[in-house]
Amino acid sequence: MKDYTLYSTFLFLFLVACNLSSPTVNDGVLEKTDKKIVIPIDSETKIFTRAMHYYKDASGVEYITLENSENDFNCNSINFYRLDSCKLSHKVLIQRDGPNGIPSFMGHGVIDLNRIIINSMNSNIIYMVDRSGRIINQINYAISDDGKATTFFDGNSLVYKPLVIVGSKIYGVQHPLRKNIKGDDFKDVPLCITIDTSTRSVELLPLSFPRLWEKGEGIGFNTHCSRIYDGKQFIYAFRKQHTVVVTSDHIHSKEYLLKSKYIDKLYNEGYPTDISISEYQKRQDELAVYGNMIYDKYRNVYYRFAYPQCSVESSDYDYMYCRKEFSIIVVNSDFEVIGETYFKAGIYAPTLFFVNEDGLYISENNTDNPESSEEKLVFRCFKLV
Image (tube, rainbow, N blue to C red; front, side, top):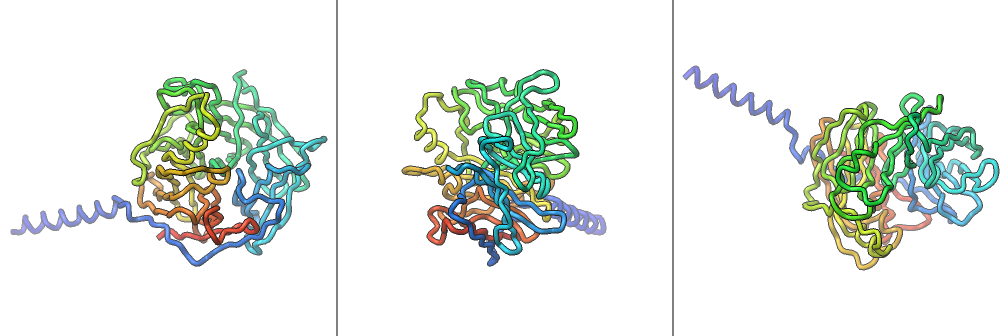
């Protein structure tokens, strides 16, 4: 009887320990709160931007930076909005021509209010500008130190790749632009390039793209990935892969399965090169894909957006910012899925978001939302429970 009692006690404690150490998929749920942030914007500013980032300065003031670079004006701008007042703080005006001209750009990152990194569009040049828009530094990174050609990178948020600077080095994600690339060809394309802002050294790191598809002629959006840095590790989350790639040195890496329960199958082929623009856009809008990956340092979790397959009759440019229904997968620090929250269509614009101490803020500027307005940017706060 004593042996049986001891065995039962041991078994009970073992099961309790297993339950405590093995999270379930209900451990992380995003719950809507009453907290909203409403920011008025002027008629010269577009809500749907390729680059919107959160920034907190040394004094603790929080900002949203909105890139306004696709317009007909003689200059582009990056708008800084303070979250404490919900008003425009200032605009960094960037000329298209002249000694401080940057003809076009795609993506930015803020080091501080007087040092802003600008990614030029389709060009291997990065610029650093000050608050007045004056160029204070620029680096051409077209050729690495060992003589290899590089491809351009961006600092977008539509496909979320925030600026990563570790020490004096900028870490950028390359784009494999060569047509007809497939299978083992990806092994020849390094994922990451570093630019040392002090020495101007350019280095291609060893870790290459994973095998993304076996057949198909064109690249499409399949190679796009969201890349984040959590202070120790880089996480690469591809649109057409259930797994994510995690590395600390871009030499060794590990893959983790972070699959959405709302996505069964991924169409993982390259698109034909002769596809029409309208058909290409329709496929992108309808097919199941994974979206952005975010790190929440306040709660030490990751969020991965997922978009189930859907059907659209027609889609315009703004639709890719809004999609239809989507979900957010919650992932713990061991890269285990601990929850997934579903969001119905027509309310949120899931490509416009930020994280702060309050929680995860998601824009309510969906084009199908009757309460949405082009005159204000609206964010709803979600708490992790």
